Amino acid sequence: MKTDELFIYGAYIATYRAIANKYPQKTPQDILSDLIANTPEDARGKWFATAKSIGLYDAALSLVESSQCDHNTLIRAARDMREENPEFAFGAAIAAIRWLRSAYEIDGVEIHQAVDYALEAANKTDTLPYAIDLLWQYANQYKDHDWIHNCLKSVVLRNAAKWGYPINH
Image 1 (spheres, helix red, strand yellow):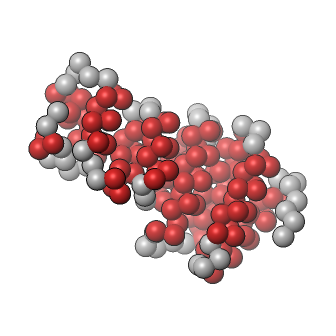
Image 2 (cartoon, helix red, strand yellow; image 1 turned 180 degrees about the vertical axis):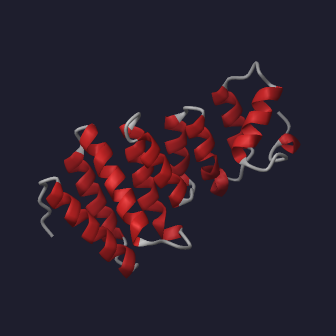
């Protein structure tokens, strides 16, 4: 696949589909890997939605481990996949919280949604204590962002009480 073939169609998913149509002998994983390899490292998270939409959930979460993805995209993924794939939904919600620091605009609703979806998914996978502890750690990592720190702490405390899990703070 030539680099000049990339991104001529605008959106990432459209680019993936165009390449997949042109090279039907290639697997979805190979196509996505080629596209990611031709993307600057700091922009690879933009392939998250494409990886999710073609069912490459592990690849999608791997992308947002080291490269930013819009927190709203991650929150929508967590919402949409919380029944079908709660492990993925949990990972997407946690990634949304992790990338809040890089977001331009954040509101309390988005923080509430990310925490709610993470805990709902964790409950379905019997990892609720781990999830609450992890979310509490993230809240404490945002001490230099007072608003995010206070909002996350409040939401985590409320949810911990709702789920019957005490936090010693």
